[in-house]
Length: 400
Image (tube, rainbow, N blue to C red; front, side, top):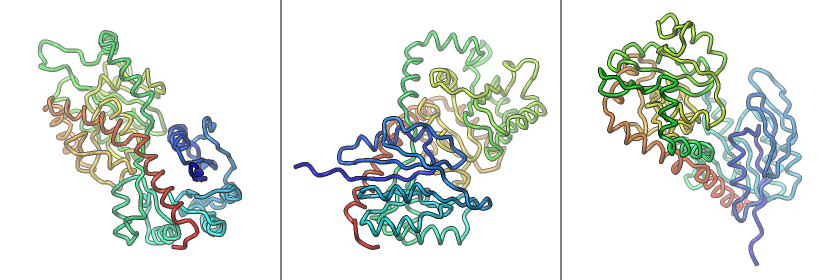
């Protein structure tokens, strides 16, 4: 007789569009039965739970600053027959302590899933988070560096698992292959948009830099604007494509005008080109495939894997605390590089050095593609989830 599937409840603060493929992958794993209980955190819009067993219950914000939430749906979900529950490891969720008690009382294995660190870390927050974490059977974090940090804080290595944060590459790879198979159409797109156009006076086509993410002041795009004149002196005709919208767009446009990088009367001839939000991969693909390097000055997230999915290496700052767990994606000199945080001269120098060495940049492009499609795939992420679920199931009913 085959073993019964491990009945697993995952409690999430929201059901984001980018995360749905991961839950579908987990639900498809042999021996795993998945129920997703999700709320709404007010930051990420929810999508319908198509292809999975999902249920939505609104969260209640009980305090504004700091934000503290109560998720009645999480506690109600624990009334279901289940073997393992995965709770979101966040000290802002006041329901976690009673959820631990209820899960223990019902003999469930407990996994805490989260970053393992806060961007606004304080000793009190860390102590509360770690105290909660030690009540679980195991911990699941987004990155190897977070795992190493927890081990240094006394967590047992065998009880800390990694699920590398990922994006679904299906549409990205389909668009990349489609455009790559039509080089004449890509060349026509580049001519129409004044990209990569050679001239007798230049040994290579002018380079194209790209930034693709929501425009947020934390991302420090003004540093890249300040570095662009120096980059353009070394590489004439350099352009920066900015794809995305957001609260910082007007300020960035004003900075670009002041630095003579943007001509409001002729946007296509500008050094910096604001392209606005572009959502469909078939429309994003030709811009990425016409770019040499993604530059993300600060606060990088999953955009790094989006860029690398098109074979575009990524340059970002070297302060890990300024990024999400995706900072682990960067392997300096292999699939991207880092510059000294806050240093415009070093940012310019690193971009120039990469553009000077075209063979190395091509090799980095190939490595970037492997990183996104193999090393940080959805399958690798869910391997981490499955390992944690099976471990917690093996410890069911035992106290830590």
